[in-house]
Length: 199
Image 1 (cartoon, rainbow, N blue to C red):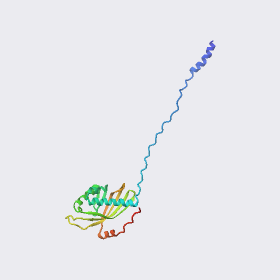
Image 2: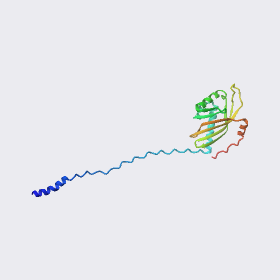
Image 3: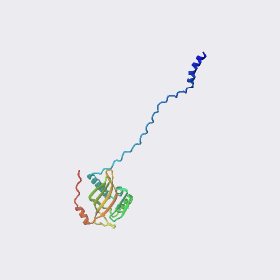
Image 4: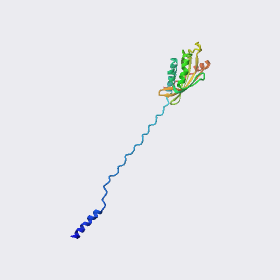
């Protein structure tokens, strides 16, 4: 009987000494992928306006220039210019910044230009980039007075604006004004009008 018990105890002792099996491990779940940062959509490239739109924007700017001048509204006149615009007048005075352009015109519109009327004779507009235009136009100024209040001969000349496109409008960033002699202005008047842009 002792021999039988010993035979039975041997497998039990082997089982007791055997290392315990590790608990089953669940398969690893991969970590969710981190989404890549969104790439901003590229900004749309500005498109060059067609010839008709170019001319229309230039004429719109000139019409606004004339209108604000003839109403002697120098706040509206100044608003046609960029904040950092510059302006050279017919005498070579050079003003920098919208406030200076405004102030330089306020005084003369209270005195020698208080009855003046500005009109355009010819307007030509050429875009040199999709958002930059050169607007050149011939002007006539009537109703000018001397400092003593006496009428003086009508004036004429050519204005050149470099303007930045803002939507469907232009804002002036730089202006050069040139007074023309009577002979030169007659030649400008006699120039053939540019061909109408295609529809």
